[in-house]
Structures are given as C-alpha cells and as structure tokens.
Image (cartoon, rainbow, N blue to C red; front, side):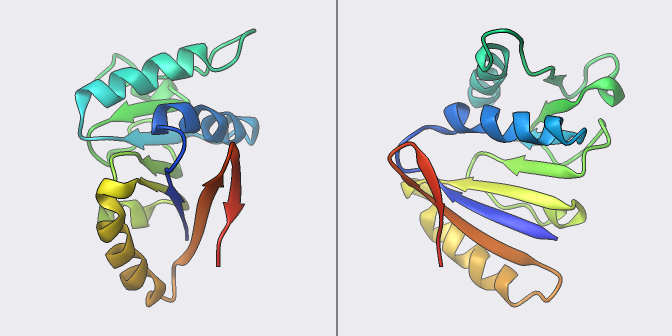
Length: 145
C-alpha cells in the first residue's frame, strides 16, 4: 500500500483536499476523509461543494441515509461505509486502520510534524508500505526525498 505524507505549509487542508478528491473520482474510485474535528469536516464539506465552478464533488457525512452511494464520505473514524479504497487523514493523526486501504493521504502541519516523523519511521520499516513525502513550494506540490 502507498502512504503519501503531505506537509501543509502554505494552504490549509480544506484548500488541498478537493484537488486530490477530484483526481480520485476521475479514476472512478472512492475516498474516505477522516478528521476528528467537526469544524474541519464542515470546512472540508464546504470546500468540496465549491471546488469546481461548473459542478461539485459529490459527498456526504458518515451516518447519512445511503453512505454506500457516496463517492466521498466525511467521517471521524476509519469506517469506509462507501466502499472507499483511498483514505485521507486530515487532522495530522495517523490511524493504523488506514493500512487496510490501497492508498492513504496523511496531512500534517507544523503542530503535528513530530507525529508525522514518528509515523514515517515506523511505516518505512514495513515492507508492505511505500511512504512518499510531498511538500508545498508555493502552490505546487513537490515530491521529496
């Protein structure tokens, strides 16, 4: 499985996640977005609605009437009720349940960088995991060493 570490240094996560979600949907895949903070889930939901001028990125919250129909599901835990193979952890907290997915996007900032470093060291020793690091240079994402 692949774990992409995204260090947020310029944009907040709600500005970054719509582009990643759009790429996943273009591949006819599904995404689970996990964050422990209700206010951040609200911001992420709004960003997904406003991401594309001509349309929106279809999504709903965990606990909705038909989560299995949602291409993007927002939740506070790693339960892919929508059948997602991709997970985005947007609160800087790693969850080992993410290892059950095909690909994980792990977002962290200055406040959670130490946790991310610890997580990187642990995952890099796991032969089933390919960790990759991305950093922001202006508005672009650059793959790090």
